[in-house]
Image 1: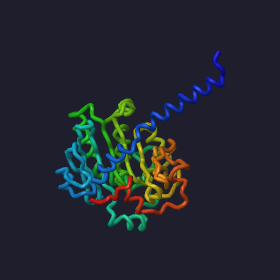
Image 2: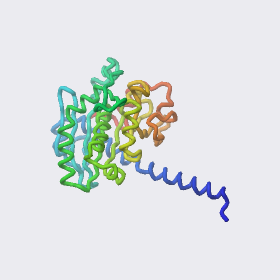
Image 3: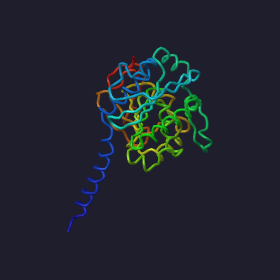
Image 4: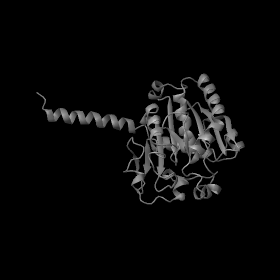
Length: 287
């Protein structure tokens, strides 16, 4: 008869194997591909439309750009027939205004209710910026989904663009454009970089209820200051999972599913680097 110790070891092996499979969906090469798409959003509009820029890798075709100058939001949507993806990418705050953006407190405590859901709040500035382009984005993505029903939807962004990307990702599932079952079958992926805290703990829990861990990755580079803003506070400011942290030894760690893993970037006492915010995966954000 099999000993109970053997049963326990076998059970632990199964659990560890399952968790490993989930983590394998994040790879450096995949992150690099979507980082370049996020960085491309900082390039001039004509370069993005022609898909001829520093970060513009072959195979992608821009189908539309969506922007709101008053809200300072810029995004583009497109398709890649090589890997069968539909991509929406969001620009963050440009470097020339990044320091002022951090210093002047515009990313501070400024919460608002999320679609009337009790106890669920998000950053008012991020939410209003997203709402200014939401309808146009949803229409464009929906059209492409109809044309290419078997393509995966990938949402990416850097900095403030990362925050907008999380709001769009949740709405795509919450509003029924993509079902939970489709998400679990790899229909949707969020891969963002340098994201600030978008909402409170209840928002994070809501996000997790719609988006499985292996389909949403929030990459944090070393001591990047922006992911630690606004300051941690479960009632108002709490990250969605799943963090992937490039630690101080340049090792990429897939963190736990809490959103605020104390063993990842939250373990740092001092996180004040704008340089790290502008150098994800070793690439400087400029166009």
